[in-house]
Length: 95
View 1: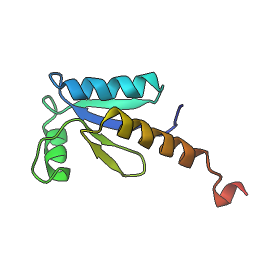
View 2 (view 1 turned 90 degrees about the vertical axis):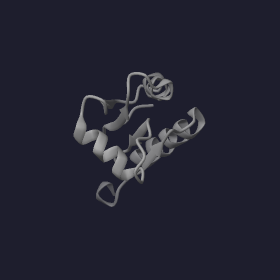
View 3 (view 1 turned 120 degrees about the vertical axis):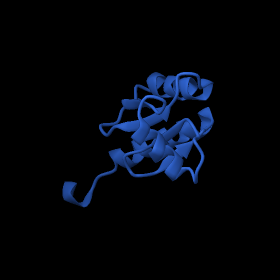
């Protein structure tokens, strides 16, 4: 399963759920950008802003603008399947 658009995974090095989410993306061969919020103050502020004041990781932002926060493997896998299906659907310009 591959996609052309990047996914952004905001996380920390100490977060086991972040490593788990990375593994799910890697096993599915989904390209993503990892941003360590402990080393990027702007990214940390963004994560806090979109999580209603919480520094919740992993926070995963998808090309369609949707966001998953601390998703289970099942929830992340389901989102990847939906994203893949949507990216494969023909657009009106393709017709």
